[in-house]
Length: 68
Image (cartoon, rainbow, N blue to C red; front, side):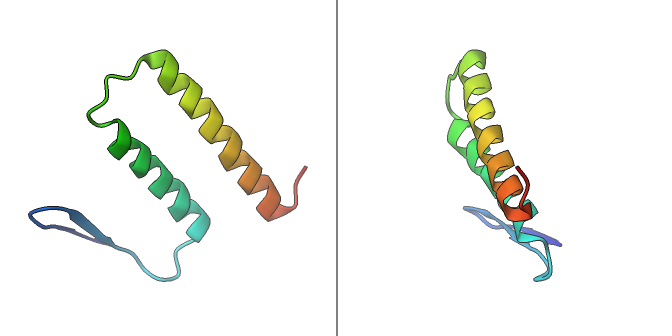
């Protein structure tokens, strides 16, 4: 993995054989962090968003692995 900081962004270079499901989960988390960075969101709102995100993640996980 290579991290590079430019004036306007941080670049992350990863090997091509990385598990895309896990990578997508990390990107979803980073997207959440970016969106809430300057927010004055309440802890209750955070808990609600987290609960909804966890449901989506588990639904994807179960569907990908053929689980019920």
